[in-house]
Length: 488
Image (cartoon, rainbow, N blue to C red; front, top):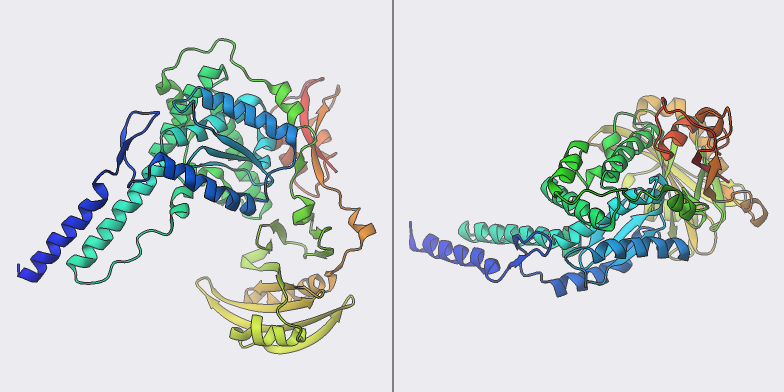
């Protein structure tokens, strides 16, 4: 070994050791010594405060229902008071999104979505979710993940020095590190701690397992609604919370808590709390009604062809069609006051070598369109861009993507979508009321299919009703039973 390599080795070893010095801590809930990379509890709390506003923006803000927020907050604080961080000030927030999700930031910031609350059947199930997330905080899993990233950084840097090269950027930003999903072992630990807290408040620990089965049924339904019935895992909260029913049952046994006599389930109380809650899209963010997307606040509406299923996301509206065909719709703020054709060819579509560019007038709006072909990892696709000059501030845009063998057959329907885009007047906007979750009593002779027909959906009404209520096709309803339905 020559002297240069030896020096590099010494430097590399020294650098690897640096983050290990003083970077260990004891997790309050487990007593385990974990490597945190120097992220102490004060830094965790500061990180949570900084990220809180970003989370609200990303997930539609806090749901505007003070009574529901107070209920979830009091339930969360009750659970947190039984934890090893009883003196920590936790913050519990209901996010205004139909997505089924729950997570915790460092410093005791815990979030559940109204989509998750709609799926839950009782207070014990929601308490199980909150207790699990509190477990991530008390076990300091976010700090542990940060420590792993610091170790990876040191290894990257040490190897780079040994090889005489430059170190790669080892971490992708602190917030991204701590917001990623946790490992299976960390999820199991959070379940075990969650069972501990549930038992201390008298809630039924088995609710963790029952809610897990609801999550699995919900993900299968969402995959079906998206036209991808074999891809349930892609629509599951369990992607970032890798858990199985067996592991949850094991966590319940391992928690070794005292037996809870007459455990609290509180179904009736919980259902009354969510009665009237917004369901599905918030009108502030646009609404899906079958094959129609309407945005009462921004004032526009359009339809997609048969065989396409709409998905409303924070950044765009997506419609998935057959064999990879898709429609993407979004809006951008205007920069300048040039013609819409110039925007299409010189800005948005500049890199696509657009062909057959033309200017259109559709429902009183100036528009421009052009087509191209693009090569992707999934093969070659035909692409058509359409841009609408909507008003003094906004441009709205469609991207139509089709496999070449389907382009001709789909062209009529996609053209109809283009020509369906129009302004939505104030009077017509009132025809799109938000959907609400309501309680209904089962009457003598009622069936699940009969009740499901009352819900304002064009398809899969029975499946939606069953998943919403945690029922199977074999479940029998009884007269007087309270069930959840969706109304407009």
